[in-house]
Image 1 (cartoon, rainbow, N blue to C red):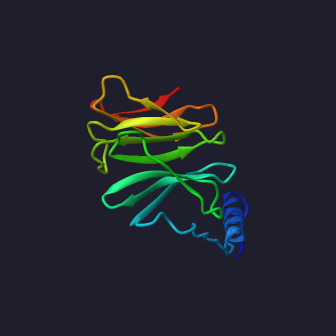
Image 2 (image 1 turned 90 degrees about the vertical axis):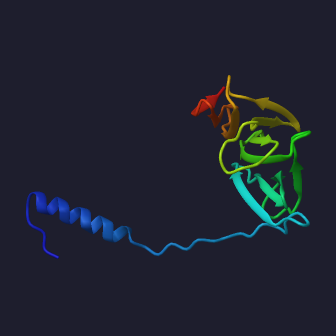
Image 3 (image 1 turned 120 degrees about the horizontal axis):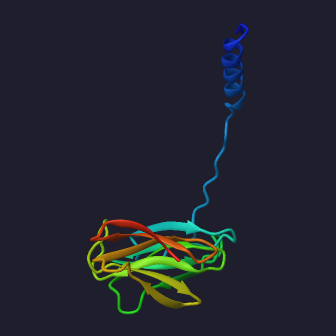
Length: 160
């Protein structure tokens, strides 16, 4: 490849830089330990810096949240919001505070009756967006701020 002066040499330099970045990258997949007995689906939603995982698993037709100490530990702790028909754990921070949502009838979209939650040391706190028909939390940072969405009104939000 020949480069000319001026703009052409900048383009050539960019092309050479791109060529140098084209390398083979190898990825590694680590399967999780065997899932809960009877589970038909497992969804891992988040991991923190310590390697703690949260997600949900289905024992048809009910979804349960879970906490997993590490990918190699094999010790699942079920996170079911008391009295709820389903629980989805969706976020975890480095303090092991867990964000998620629960309700009476799970669907793919935010539904009336969905409620967000934050779990700290096994204690659940419900988080409902003001005057909303349904709320879900998806992630939580180390400051304890959570993000989510609400239905009617349809809005994304930060909960502090």
